[in-house]
Image (cartoon, helix red, strand yellow):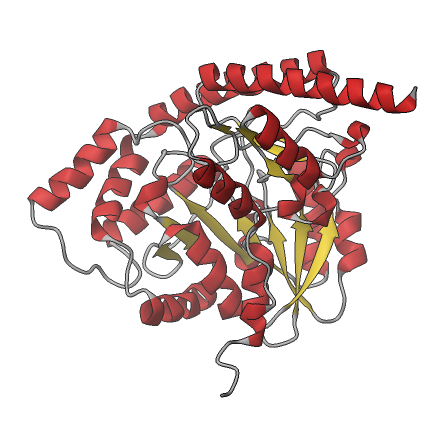
Length: 396
């Protein structure tokens, strides 16, 4: 029998995050605390849920256009202009997708010819590299550095560019590090992108969750709208993970080809989610402020706790993750996370789940209640003291 499987798919590694999710579920222990999931602990705000319910009551249960409800696309345009000062055409430059992840996938497939290169800064979201491979691209990894607060520098992009480079993925605010790019950082990267005629795929799903000024989109910079595919969605800012809704904004020629793939693979995003998303964009700004305030409180608590523990951790200004360094213990990230779960019943994600440059770090999500975080950090403090005692004993 012929090999029934695609070689490209077989050689893609499973998500490193799933390993710890699976262990936790198999433990079936109510004392286990998971700090590994990037999902808000808030319920979707009631007025947004209510609009979804109302759409069902009105019998809005049919297909929308492939590109999504025009009303929603127009609200996306209103949002982008209100927040970033970018003007998009709702009819030609906006596509509603099933989560931001679909937009990443079909965006790369619409852009890439076999063998072209995609620059992927890491640590970063686990989908970029496999999606690039499935699109036929050669992924080129740019290893971000802790001493730069895991920001991407223009020099790093310049050094990675070849005559085959086509796309630069810009994953900021960043999952897993919480790093952000400020305007001056983006301006330097934009100059390189323009000089080398690169398309930028800017994943801004955490754009509303920033704690140091306002998020700046690279698409808002001069000369960048026409070469940027901006990806965003509703999961993080509006606590709408299960609604599975995202969108892409970009040049009409690119969005048209993305829509073609979406048309054949998906048809359209769920209408109930789209109706709810209209309400989110119209009236959800206050909800974002409330949730962001809570996340910031938790962020400050964790940073202070790490300082008291003697754990090095740069201050993240975006998303809802911290990325503490555990190199002092002489363990790999995977070893630390495995022991921490087995001995203290707390699940975190090894930094290597997000790329090799994540070695020596852990991703800890603070999309959890402060009460749960306090219990988990108490256990971490105990675990860290135990490891230090072991190291001292081994040296004596």
